[in-house]
Length: 127
Image 1 (tube, rainbow, N blue to C red):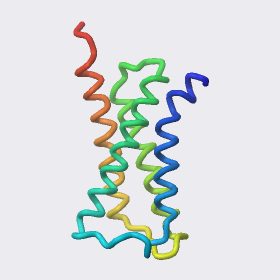
Image 2: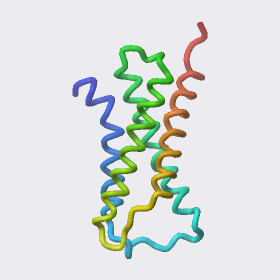
Image 3: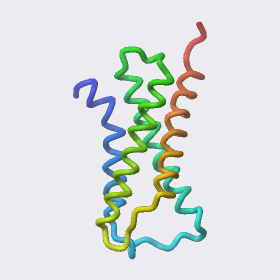
């Protein structure tokens, strides 16, 4: 397995899982117990994607210490996937695109990228 594939495989597999989940027609999902439960799920699953994208970018970066650039790229990539996921749901019976879901996706993506960089900074040896 090439280093690039090894770095990106977890993010790609997670994105594939999200695609499969988004392909399930709406009638097969139980109703959310309260309105924000759906938004919390969106935020949580995209937090994972943002985390995995940040990991892949940092591993493959020529300058892994460039945290602002890695954060911005990881958050943007995961957020754009969230946008494509919302568009994809327009074509799934019983599902719809919702800008609030996308907002939760974007917030989770940014939180995941930030969390990854915070964890790696905390684990880095002191200079």
